[in-house]
Image (tube, rainbow, N blue to C red; front, side, top):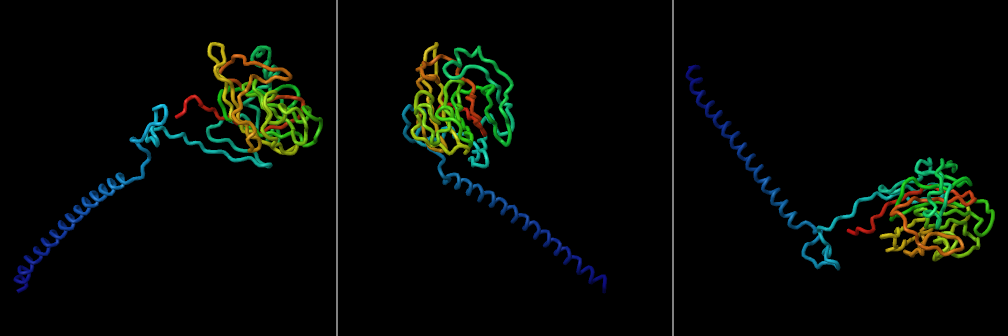
Length: 313
């Protein structure tokens, strides 16, 4: 009896096993179908998104003057990404943008040499008469201070630049006119942006703070009180010479404490005192000079960005 019941149950078990196998195969088939459908759906969504994505530019718009690029041209090179620095305060110097050459960050004079030699109009004609020495300016508390033994000359040379300089005249007022808080920033060693305590200090207009020395006064006097940190932000376009002849003069744009004081002003030539100078052919790049003029002026956070103004994207 038991053998008959077992024999009767064995076909039923086989049927159940077959049903289970069919169920698994069916589930696997459904899974494959779902995967295929999902892939198709993703492809359709991607194609739809690509077809309806916001335009990054165009290839069928009119050409701009010159014929190189179209309006909103999608093939026009995008600008390089630069991480900006921070702005200065009375207590803290600025930090430089990511593509800047830092000439002074408050710690040392490793980017400078001392310079016992000509400045301004005489820099290039008499360059061989100058002497580079160890820099002697005092560095402490995040700034460097002028001493009377030598100018400072950057080891690196530059052409077209954006230059940021923070400086402070002595807090204790001593002297008057050009004898009060006097220094200077000589771009390429020869084109001077005047540094001077011009807060309630009368002097000749083309020799006060932020003047293009001996040529153009600033548009306004944006000077702060003695002892306060001040900023110059300068865009300098170097002169161009071909076969010993001037083909493009130098230009300078200057912001003094955030105020525009020189608006792409053409320089008449190198810096000079009491005379009119003429351009002298020189190299395409030159050093930055910080002038020693007998007053304990302080500097901090000096940085330079090289500009390629001849190649506009």
